[in-house]
Amino acid sequence: MRKLTFLLFILLINVLQSQKFDNLAQTPPMGWNSWNTFATDINEELVKDIADAFIDLGLKDAGYEYIVLDDGWSTRERGENGELIADPKKFPSGMKALADYIHSKGLKFGLYNCAGSKTCAGYPGSRGHEYQDAKTYASWDVDYLKYDWCNTGKLNAEEAYITMRDGLKAAKRPVVFSICEWGDNEPWKWGKDVGHLWRVTGDITPCWDCELGHGNWSSWGIWKIINMRKGIREASGPGHWNDFDMMEVGNGMTQGEDRVHFGMWALFASPLIMGNDLRAASKETLEILTNKEVISVNQDPLGIQGFRFMNENDIEIWIKPLANDGWAINFVNMSESKKELNYDWKKEHIGDNTVNRNLEVDKFTYEIRDLFKKQDLGTTKNNLKATIEGHDILMVKLKKK
Image 1 (cartoon, rainbow, N blue to C red):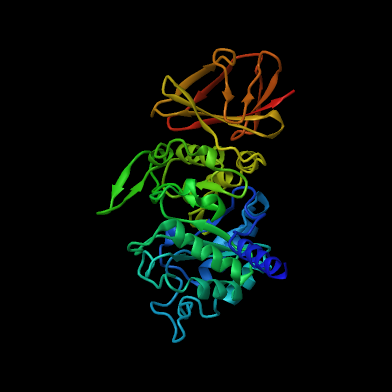
Image 2 (image 1 turned 60 degrees about the horizontal axis):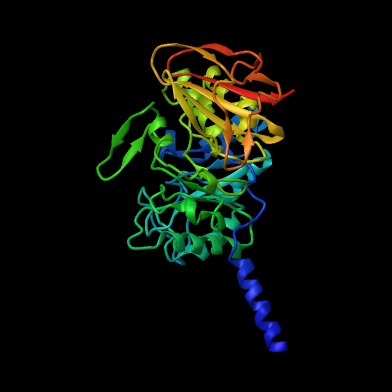
């Protein structure tokens, strides 16, 4: 009997150690990542400036908390004991001191590595060093790990990410684990018990609907990414999110396109990870990024990913059920010229069969709020009328009266 009890105890310990950290990322993570703007040209001063900007520009107040260093932070080779070393030229004070600075602002610190032998930019990957690297991150007080998929040879993706998950758990410091294998191995089918978010596409680029080829891989515009995956929305929810990549708001698209980008990522319950240079961000860019009404849709506690409802006269309509019987609805003008919207709420039945929710305009009246203009637009008793500029959005929230 004692032997059986002991074996059950060991089994329980193994099960607990093989789970990801619970109660993290219950809403989509919000933060900033260095890659989209700076690639490997990163350093200690930049990161401190970004942390300061989170406070000075109201980004922390809006809900952003993670500052994530992407590829290029380490030396080109590991130390004599196989350990990762922060590049002393880029980060002379070391990663622990940098984490302390970020934490002193009430923010959280993230790093990047890769499941392969080398990272995508050729720095040391974690293959064969997963537990060692996890201990290193814990000693530096890292809160978030983005884990890429370059130079992986014949590795099995699910098993590779499980290995790092278990390493992080063994290191005993709670870490949000971001799976970044571009959706090639369908992480929405297995990622829930492994990580807290998983990329569903290749890398983003700041354009409306383009594809930029790089030999054997491509970067994708906003609508290419939006339309890339089908039937995955049910995989997303509190603690486990479909990640449509870091945002390109402020990186060269029009203001209207930036609003569409931000509004769609909010509707998708995708992590809101900024990718622009916050030190040079325009007033208009900051107004988009700090819009708490749009952010509230992203952070809605139900955690339901929105979906395309219909397309009418080049206006795509996307819907998302919210807590307290609310709804978020995006009307996106896909054309380059302005469109007049005259939407009859009773014309089409709006509902989400996956969660058994319906917009019951025949029984209840809903107040309508324009989230980007922060204006009330009446109720569902009347048609919704608006002018939507080319490549722009009307994002509304419906609240039952």
